[in-house]
Image (spheres, helix red, strand yellow):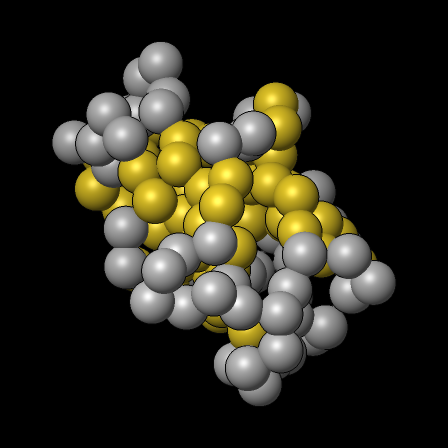
Amino acid sequence: MDSRASTSEGLEGYRLSINGRRLTPGRVNELELGEENRITLLPLKGESVRASLYIDGVEVIDRGRPYENPEAVEWRWRPDDPTGIHRLTLKIEGGGEYLFEIYGRR
């Protein structure tokens, strides 16, 4: 993996999204971010997933399972400043570590 973002290799079978917008590994994702943002990791095969999420080096601890998709993991992220570049590190238990970059705008 390079320092910017991972490739989609190995992330097969999962979808990571912020506020309903899918993140694409391997490029900078430009998104509208608010004061509170929902980040969802959805396993496409319907199996339950366990994962940790770090944004700009800090673990996002506000984590749960969405009622409508109990096999998914959802985090609530409240950035000090949603604008600019943010680096996300996703660690899937038994599945590896993946890097994403997002460019936040209001």
